Image (tube, rainbow, N blue to C red):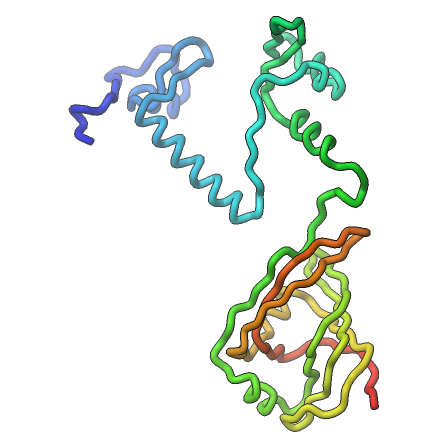
Length: 251
């Protein structure tokens, strides 16, 4: 759009009421316009800037796994009275009464509202959110799976994993192996039962030195603290150069 057709009311002089440098720049550049003390209108240029900031924040929050929702600005006063913030906020909080004599407040923040929404949905400890695996995938590489085994002088071939535990703060893990075989001189030999894989997630990923071409997916259940959530995962054959393994050789 041409500047001649754009609404951009700039100012030549610094507004007397603007004390902060950024405030003066935003007013003079036509980003915002002050309507009253503490009340501003976002002008077209400012609206574009604001939308770009929202986009950046949304992209980063989505990448972090956050879930976006929208809550009402007017909120029941009873909720704020229950949390004790109705009186604690002081006279600055805008309080109104609707036509049905219900007390409402103009919510400055949404902690009380989001807590109420969550409280209404959670019926037991089994419904509490917790850190868990969701959908985990490791893409295929360029190595032939048979060549990975053939080039391994000694190791453990894990065909299936069972239950385990992960410290979500440190990445340390212990996983049970339900089907495994020794690798000796590049060949699968004796089966191994009751094996456990012990390690650290980030360190294990850094220790991968071969990735197969045989990518596959499967569905399962992630169980934790009484909850069972369906999840999916997928990966090809991978080789980890070094890992702690405990188990007993089977006949």
